[in-house]
Image (cartoon, rainbow, N blue to C red; front, side, top):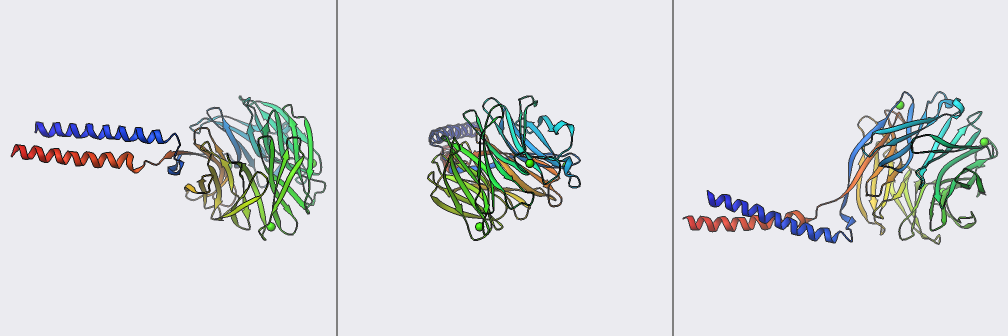
Length: 420
Ligand SMILES: [Ca+2]
Ligand SMILES: [Ca+2]
Ligand SMILES: [Ca+2]
């Protein structure tokens, strides 16, 4: 009996020594970080729900948690549409929420994008329907850490004006969108604004191809400005452009599958490969270009809406899209060679769900923003938090267990033989 106890203790001791040795070896190999063995795990999901409809549109990493902007609206009265900003902690609790309503008048404001600058100012772009729903003006808002509005710019360039995305580079804001001199549509022009941190416009560039040009996303790297969107010539085609930081056009490329094609997001990885997420007919697609604008590949991710693309802190590409007619949100990570690292999807029983943005953080976790509703459209905003963890490798658990059992059996047999 005494011997058995002793053997058990010896076995447990051997197990932990082996576990320690193998985990030390594997953590050393993590210096090169084997991201191929990462998996994504849902940490929590939260909703934001008021009597009107809400959609989480965009967000950014902030201080100890994300900040998100919500489009809050009422289908029966466009004037009640407004912009709500939510600051979260990392557990998904709302620290503060603010609603922007110009001069207290309901005039249909709608947010499109949000970014945080290096001084922790929150910048939001979108549109406001000044006098009627066909006469939008461009809106730029800035909030400080406490949620106080510090800047508000409204520009009426044309009949219809809308800002869709922004990027911050060396104390300048670069904002994209579209502008239109008529209220009939189909004559939109792509808009690029360079703005100082006081909200003054330094440069306004208009690009038009075909009948209609709309810019949807902007990404700046190494003082080069990359923009994507779509144009209408024969069918909708994806346009991708490179500018310098003085807003001079360097190149522009058109991608046409033969079907209707739209681009939603643009990012650039550590190897300077450009990724464009969008839609072609009713499929989710991912396009790749190199820095010089040479087309590399297009990938069909299956039936779904726009691909939202971001680069995470491991340098991998996170892709999310609304799939299966709002039945689920599909998420996947690929490495820079295009190999899939993980894929997962999110559903909420009884609800139709959709994604609008992904917010990667510095430690590999990421947030997903979107909306859900019992019927088509948004009833409430959703935010999900995922972590990415290393899948335990074979050697770190199985090997110590196997060796320990083998040693234990040998010791037990020897003891029994001695006892008999
Ligand atoms: Ca609601
Ligand atoms: Ca206008
Ligand atoms: Ca096309």
